[in-house]
Image (cartoon, rainbow, N blue to C red; front, top):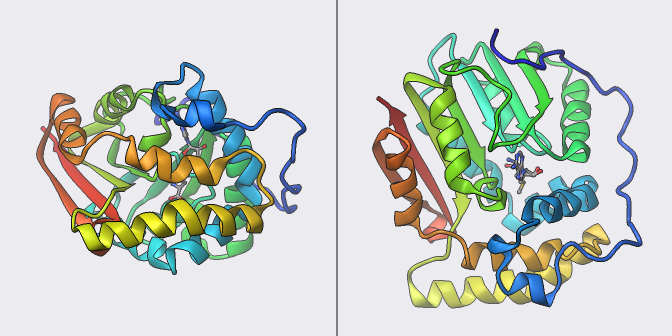
Amino acid sequence: MLYRYGQRMSQSTPPKNDLKEASPPAWDGQTLADPHHQSDKADRVRQMFTSIAGSYDLNNRVHSFLLDQRWRKAAVKKAAVQAGDVVVDVACGTGDLAEAFAASHASAVIGIDFTHAMLERARYRQHQLQDHRYSKLFYIEGDAMALPLDDACCDVVSIAFGLRNVQRPEAAIGEFARVLRPGGRLVILEFDRPRLAPIRWGHDLYTKVIMPRTATWISGDRSGAYRYLPRSVETFLTRDRVVGLMQAAGLEEVAAKSLSGGICACYLGRKR
Ligand SMILES: C[S@@+](CC[C@H](N)C(=O)[O-])C[C@H]1O[C@@H](n2cnc3c(N)ncnc32)[C@H](O)[C@@H]1O
């Protein structure tokens, strides 16, 4: 069996608006000093995405100037999907990358995420799409560090802007390698910081000063999500470290490519 919890669920009613809880924010000045080493990072991440799920797509489009969809298309191209391939999109969120893979030659696309509110949006979007290509999409709730999938069950694993949010990225990459068939491809999209100083300066101004204000305003967020975003990028693993983790998990021909002047990186590796 390909996956253990595999009933397709559709969502025909719009998900409810985000819960603006009275609980403390997921992120504050103290936890943002070192976001990746908080022992409860996973809970904070889930709380944050529950808070912003409803405005997530709009904020992505506005604040990336639509570049986000171009990066996802580049990732699908890199994965070189063959007719009949099974694709697993981990940390699928509201389904942008999973939908892009569904429009390729893949025979099935499984989107996995651990935030219920994000998956509800993904299922609702799928229901709205009304196109036969998207009937091969399945969304299931699960953790990147313990995928509810059998060994060697798929041809492509993808993760877009998710690895940085996982508690232990090395455990997740190990899982990705486990579920890939020999010859299968892992493709990772993740934010990066431009290496050229003038571009980095402008990028920092935008991501640390402007975007947190405008994105928080659009989402009405109180979780600290848009302060966490730039901070989690600047304190995340270097590109070489991500490449090293992929190699350590048994992937070969590992390469990283800069997109849009180094704002984003696309990693590709192949299972032996
Ligand atoms: C920035 S969003 C990216 C969503 C989507 N991939 C995209 O391209 O828009 C990060 C997603 O990672 C999910 N996530 C974080 N840690 C996870 C984990 N350990 N297992 C599964 N999903 C996780 C969050 O719930 C969230 O939906």
